[in-house]
Length: 324
Length: 257
Ligand SMILES: Cc1cc2nc3c(=O)[nH]c(=O)nc-3n(C[C@H](O)[C@H](O)[C@H](O)COP(=O)(O)OP(=O)(O)OC[C@H]3O[C@@H](n4cnc5c(N)ncnc54)[C@H](O)[C@@H]3O)c2cc1C
Ligand SMILES: Cc1cc2nc3c(=O)[nH]c(=O)nc-3n(C[C@H](O)[C@H](O)[C@H](O)COP(=O)(O)OP(=O)(O)OC[C@H]3O[C@@H](n4cnc5c(N)ncnc54)[C@H](O)[C@@H]3O)c2cc1C
Image 1 (cartoon, each protein chain N blue to C red):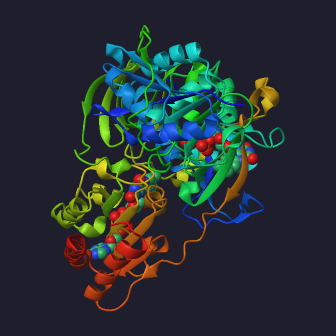
Image 2: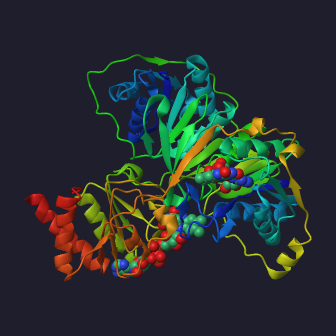
Image 3: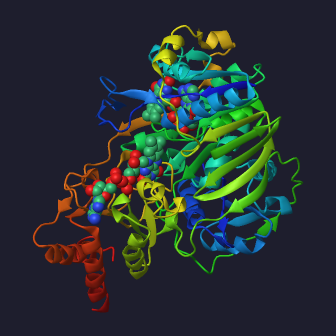
């Protein structure tokens, strides 16, 4: 049976996050030829609709309201339920982002449905689709199936390949007006600490530093390497707690979960809570003075040595490769 | 104030994990209170100490979970409730867990419910918000600071590294993020007192629930360990040679440069 699937798109600083496109690809896999309807909620999101269509959505519905400028579970919940009642989809896909994690259980609870969170891969397609998700802090995986009824999943950023952008695609972008009322949470202040540039959770290359970086200045060579590779700088909790960098760089169970093509861990011991946030990375490089460090167990390539010697040498060597 | 903390007994994921017959091997494994629930318990105790009232810790599990409840009582919680599903349920999912907890809480007039933001074993992060929705109360997830004055609540929450200040009111459910507090260790007198504190045990029947009411919506069909990576290559030779080799491997073998 083909499924009509709704996908919640998510904007960051005026542009759609990649995870929105990855969610569309996941929706395609489960739709069995059914229609993909993109959803966008905010105070001014109409212009983003076309991007979702070019990435595979058949049409897009937007809900615009001043109360949707900042995410609240009540506001977005009301917008979602209004569209849900109109569209009656067979499946729902969100990104497993801060927003998706906060909103999806509320919706699933309202709809008395299952919810398969933090999906990193899908086996099979259509009605036979089975969802793979990490459990036990990434040390194991489970395959989960939806029983009957509404299918609802959230997908981990950077794991599901988005569809190639097709500029020739077109589709309807319509808006639904919803009365957003009675917000029980009021956001009185937002302190943005995330740095500009590459979004850490979507970066293809992450250079992460730990307590071994020893100071805020110690991050400079890591930043240089990240710039050279078009990547982002991340950190362990150890480095954040020691005030070498801001908590917004933290990777792990408490911080961001990343799945780049290349993860370089410098001066990070490899605690399980850190690994929970990066062990799915495609290629892992560990640089650590201690040959016994846990991080070597998940590394594809390791160098036992002082990061302050190794990273500058890497920068020189990569520059050579890049100019050839 | 009427305060509840939701506590899950979890596998200590710092331990080695083995799978046999599609199940995680639990024999001899170390079990702990889910670390994020320790923050929830600690915060519950601090709120009670400041505003008065009582802290009840709730878990769904089997008899083994009594140990984690006793630990929570030793930290300073007043009462514990074990909802024992061992005889009734073979499988459960987040829908099941939330439905059972909400059924227990629905007539308790809770002012504040605290949960962990995620369980380190199941990892879905669903149970807290699901419970709040079933109870019809507001929730705020991944909080790092909580201030209560009367029924007004001011919260700081962590949103992927950014922080949001939220104003809301009781009744409320919050989920704890690391950084909320430093959970205390149970003291020896605490451990002695905990032995005498009430620990109620309930089954689904006591909540007027049938197995059908809580039947899981999803099904785990397989559990497996990630394919063993070919043992990582720790490079050798003098450092400049190692770096050359690494960059060459990243470029030609891994093709990530
Ligand atoms: C509930 C909970 C949640 C947590 N969540 C997270 C999380 O999300 N993310 C996270 O990262 N941690 C988290 N932690 C903390 C985690 O347990 C570790 O304490 C932390 O990851 C350690 O950081 P580190 O590896 O930088 O420091 P350390 O463990 O101190 O390791 C430093 C490493 O640097 C190496 N080193 C030192 N100098 C050099 C040098 N010059 N060159 C090369 N190597 C060098 C050392 O050999 C050592 O291996 C959490 C803990 C708890 C309890
Ligand atoms: C592979 C696997 C197989 C499982 N099989 C079974 C099974 O056969 N039988 C069975 O009974 N259970 C089983 N479970 C457990 C059950 O699926 C989960 O407890 C439930 O779905 C909660 O989901 P979660 O672990 O993702 O918790 P999350 O939603 O991540 O938990 C968030 C918070 O909710 C609260 N919470 C979560 N669970 C409980 C709880 N049990 N009691 C009190 N508070 C809680 C805690 O405060 C926790 O920090 C299994 C779990 C896994 C991972």
